[in-house]
Length: 298
Ligand code: GRG
Image 1: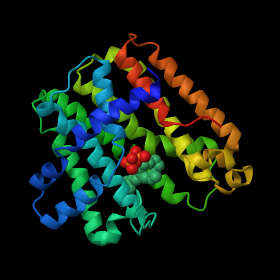
Image 2: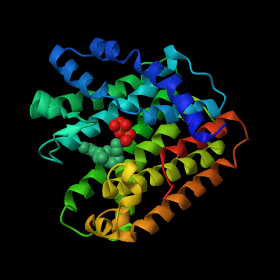
Image 3: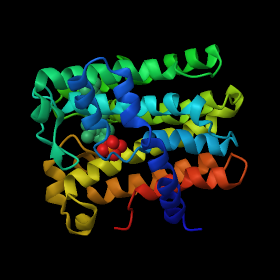
Image 4: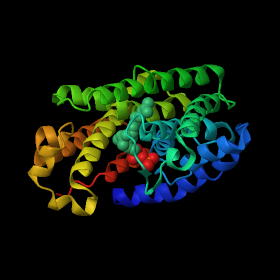
């Protein structure tokens, strides 16, 4: 099966299944209707669910069946946390964006105070959901620890702090890499790690999965930067070197568009090589299919 078909089939099956209980679960766990509305507004706004999909795919690669009752909340916790990061990133005090996924941002709709609280609520609820499960207590503790490391001041928040400080600074590529790894890569790393923890895979088996996750995270960042420079995927062929040069703290800004594209291709190759260490089969092919998110045909 072509890898993009495999990914599309996986999304068609799993995105509706992961989404179905969300609204009711957020309502049930919120003590204030307006807060619940603000939280659900962004969670239900049409995100790709990339991170929980990676967790479910990792469980499939481990041949661990998904138990709705036990696994849904811990798996979706990461989507709550990801949504918090987007809401806070859009706030007037940060990027001050009016639109996200083509709709008014949370603070435009609910005001900056309520948007801040919606983000706070989602961040906290994520950790509640990691422990709202019959998984063993040690597994729950591992999930809490790993997500705190990925999302906190040693991970995503550190990346965001570097981003805030570098607005008018031309970063060298090595520093840009660290910023991206923390800001975006850490949560994608955790998405796969969560599958390994929930699936209770022995740590001796983790390395190729996490190498795949880190290659995927880096490819995601390079691709996001390329799209930032060239606009939509349909316009990829039309971007010029001048466009790339104007976007300073991006991979195309540092490397030029052609070299950034080559770095994307090389990174995908590294991720595929990591997966080659896993037992061949459906699960392994499914993880590889995630690379079809990136259009490298330029
Ligand atoms: C505010 C602490 C704090 C952190 C914010 C993740 C982040 C840090 C900011 C988002 C800025 C941004 C656009 C980063 C690029 C990578 C990224 C996270 C893109 C959005 O992820 P997708 O494509 O989004 O998975 P959807 O909309 O599908 O959920």
